[in-house]
Structure formats: C-alpha cells, structure tokens
Amino acid sequence: IPFGIVGAILGHLALGYNVSMMSFMGVVALSGVVVNDSLVLVSAVNDYRRDEGLSILEAVKAGGTRRFRPILLTSLTTFLGLSPMILETSVGARFLIPMAISLGFGVLFATFITLLLVPCLYLFFEDLQRGFGKTARYVRTGLRGREDPPPAETPSPAE
Image (cartoon, rainbow, N blue to C red):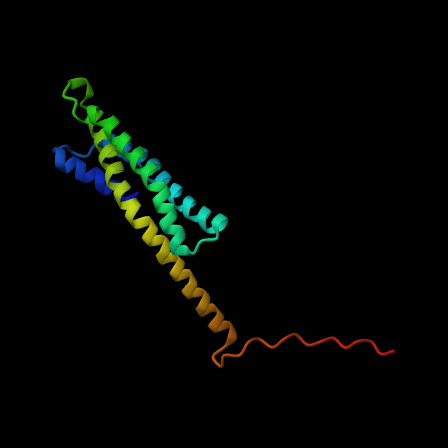
C-alpha cells in the first residue's frame, strides 16, 4: 500500500495536480487492488510449496512466473481504463481526475514494485523464520549442546 501511495503522489506531480480529497478516495480504491496482487502472488507460492513439494526458491520462481502475466495485465487494463478520465479536459470531470490519477498511477507503480519486492520479502522472511528456529533450538538445548533428557521410565509393577 505505501508503494501505491508513492505512485499516486508521483502521478500528481507528473501531471501537475494537487492532492485532494478525491485523491485519497483513489488511494482507498488502490489499496484493494494492491493487496489483491500481493495475495495472489503469495497464494501461488504457497500452493507450489504445499501441493508440488517444491523448495522455497523454486516455489517463488514458479509462483512468480505463473502469476506475473495475470497481475501485470490486470494492472495495465486498470490504468488504461482510467487513462481517458485522466486525460479528460471537460469541466464536469475535473473533480474526478485526481481520483483517477491516484488509482491509475498508484496501481501502475505498486504493481511493478509488488512483482519485484514480494518474492524477495517472501524469501527474506522465510530465512528469518529459519534463523529464529535455529536460535530457539539452541536456547532449548542449552549452551552445552545437550538435548533435554529423555523422560524417566516408569517401573513395571512387580509380579
């Protein structure tokens, strides 16, 4: 979502429009699209890990490859669909143009960042989780490297 906001602000700067209340409405609509793109990508990676049994790196590659085109095409069609409103010059459309700029440029910018950053962050957090797991095992086993002693056997009843 923050990258979508950056894209919206860059769009306003590039076209010379001030940020208005309608711009913020565009950012609200933008949030749903950006979150959906990220969820679709992460879901594809998780599916490859669970169903195909791929390693984390192979699952990220496969999920990114499988979902790249649908995410990109959805975002490009959103931007192209909003472009007539962005380029509109009539007085009646002037109040909607900032919303279209926020949504269009925010989606465009956030999509490219999402397609690059989400797979990297997925790998980063997986490594971080693995590191915490090793640290927890180290703390559990103690500084001497011993495992917890096995539970004592219960004596069998005498006959």
